Image (cartoon, rainbow, N blue to C red):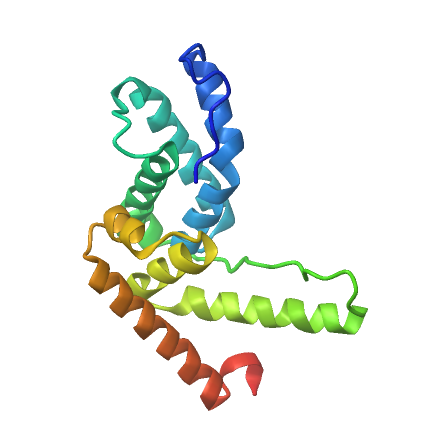
Length: 183
């Protein structure tokens, strides 16, 4: 659920609204863009362009969806455009993704192992075809519902469910075969 805007009576200026949107969704959008393009700097550049498009089109926002959904849609479309571009296809991709171990109660060894498992799982998710990867990212990382994912990437809810199932199966097969964590 989207957090309420400060001063929802419409008294925010365009600049104030943009700053609020950047603070509220900036990190999520960078993470989302990274899941598509697999390059941190490129993801940050895409999100900067997303906020430029947002600012230009703020007056056209019709409130048929939340700002979050609107920004996700712009980000997804920008990422897909970038993936199709000549400059992206001819660029060397860098792998960058890490999670922090959640519990402070764990030993250093446990934290390192957990971090490595998260990193490997992230790499496996990033290695999936884009159609499987994007639904897994929206569902597990962004906690969107299947109907929201369907609307966002313009496919049916049943296709979302099918892709979620196939993505899980691919990851499970890698785990079962021992491809995961070099086993």
